[in-house]
Each structure stands twice: as C-alpha cells, then as structure tokens.
Image (cartoon, rainbow, N blue to C red):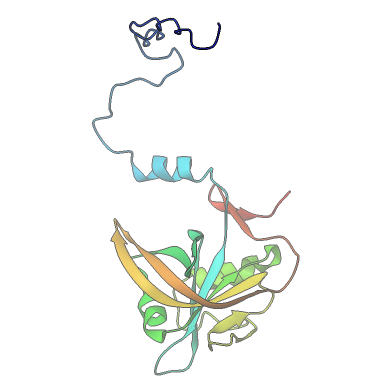
Length: 194
C-alpha cells in the first residue's frame, strides 16, 4: 500500500467463539447434593489418607513450673512476614488451657524414633513428661531432646472451629537439630518415610 493511501476498513461482526458445553463432563461426580453430612468414621477414614507430621506442643505450666505438653498432627506454617504458624486443638483438651496460659510455647517437630514421646504426650495424666528428656528454648519452653526442629512461639489468636480451636502463633525463634526422618501419622497409625 503506497504512503498516504487509505487503509481498508476492518471487517466487523460478532466475535467467533466456541460453543459452551451443553452438559457436565462425563467424568464429573454426580450433582445430587448429599442430604446429610458424612459420619465421623467416614470423615476420619477419608482424611486419614493425608499423611502429616507429628508435633509436640509444650510449655512450662504456670504456678507449678512443671513441663506440660500435647501432640498434634494439624500443624502448618501460615506467614513469613510476620512469622506465624498454626495448629488445631480439640476443645476437650485438658492440657491446652495450661499451655495457652504459659505464654511461651515450643512446637517440637518429632523424629521417627520419637513414637514413645508422641504416645506419652497423647494420653491424659499428671506427669506425661516422666522419662522424656528435655531442655529449654530461648523463650523458656520445653524443647524435647531428639526433635528434628523446634519453634519457640506465643499465641497470637485463637479461632473456634467446630469441635476444635485453630491457634495462630507468633514465632519468636526456631532451629533445626538433625537430618533424621520425621514421625508420620497416616491412616490412624504412625510410621516414617519409606
């Protein structure tokens, strides 16, 4: 086209589009909504297929100066700035109020050989730390010997969620202590990385 010549007018009209699908994909689940929620056994069975690590959440009990702790497998990082982690605790826990009131907590990431530590801290009782070796974090919370890593933290917020509380904790310090394998909880039992 020579300089100064008029360009041809663009062709106008509706845009060309693909036809929308006319039905659900053949591999889609049924669209019939369940009329009831799944029962607890089915819920545990399905969600138990998600492997998790195991943590021991520990603190020094106010008033007595004794170590207190519980285990959880619902633990995750939340934020880098500010550094936050979260874990879930059953409303029925007798230990959680002691830990919450302590101020400083330690989340101990348990190693595969620490099955006995997990089992001891999972039961109800007065002296769950009998036979468990520990030192203190810089913040003063119990750091379980043999843990792969530790996170010194304090409760930032607690949110009710069904029969549990979602606890968001501010991280003050942390460290890794070994290169072993973590203790894994899967399908209702403990194990390690194969």
